[in-house]
Length: 139
Image (cartoon, rainbow, N blue to C red; front, side, top):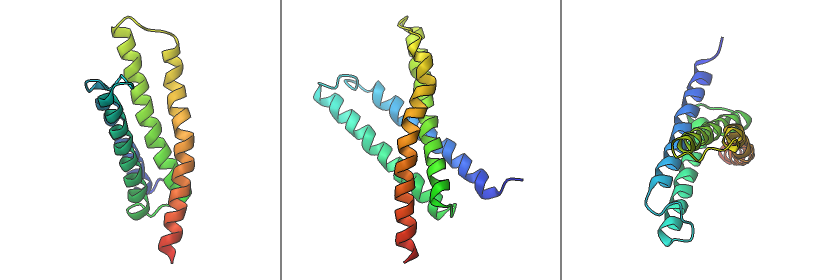
């Protein structure tokens, strides 16, 4: 039987994953967001990165302070959330390509590749940050 804390950590991962998806979907739908050469597009993208960074840090903090999890467990839950957000964006991009008749088989690869490519560095960064946090608070 699973502990209540483990179940809560999974629920938090899903909720934070939805937050990543919403940040990505909303920021890409804003006027000029797709044109990196446009000044407003650059600002929207940087804002999305900053908001995602805050979501990332908040998730690490929640897992540490509320869940009292180990750094490895925190990193796993954070990487799961990031992968959920990336999967949601890949599904959204695939659906958009179908609606606009620009579908390519590469979109099917994105359903697996985007979550995997983004989850690995997220795990490593979260592991490092949560280990530092645990060590600083032990003192």
